[in-house]
Length: 325
Image (cartoon, rainbow, N blue to C red; front, side, top):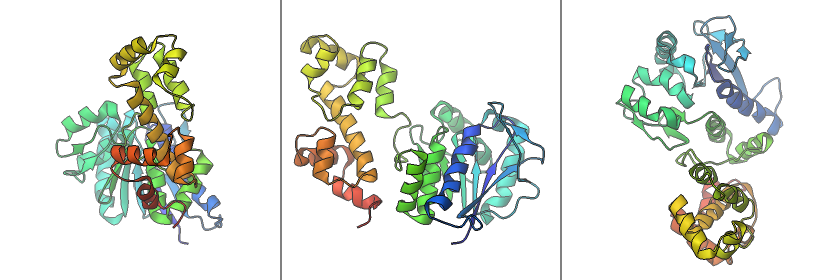
């Protein structure tokens, strides 16, 4: 197995997790494959503007392995985000370097606001891209040639990969690892890091439970967390109303006013979201999985899943092929 070299760019004002998350994900591949540390699956190198250490937004200091001037050939370039990249001098130096290196590199990726380092090159013009939701509007205004998706976690368009918020850098790294080594290795890395293997690139940046909690500042916010941890239990309107000490009719009216959806639709969305994760990370039968998230029958689960995601649970599982077959 040959070693692929991944270059992470560093600069003053970088987001530390944008570096550490992908670096740890790639480093873990050698361990989960039983590889030889003398010939690792990936060599991760940190590339600075100069040899001197640089300081992240959080105050952590990093020492680069190489500089923009002497970096070796790379298989993959990853540009981390951070406020420092939006400084004109830093942005200009990194963009110029990416322009020189991109055509010699198999993959070029950005994490979060790392897109500010790639966008000025023009290499992303006409491509769909992702970035942190808070900066999506600014990126679209500054770089009108880009097709910015404000909701996506990560997107691939040709050789270019872009992703949202800091933890999405791990999602993107797992996707790159899966491309190189297949879903079984990516799943093993995800387990080691204790993260989900699959959060679809097109999935909204806010998970449904988090989005519901952000929308509610009253007693319903605690209900969201409780429901998400008890999906296999009775989650009827009467049961939920009882937990909030309201009558069923008043509960339903207030719930819909708060969330813009009925309690039944809310519960089904959470159950299906969790089921989608378990289809990828668990080897249970469809019947067992349906029961584990509270559907009264496998048929009811299949119908609800296809209605929401446009495919059957079986086809969804086969698509990702984590468990073989």
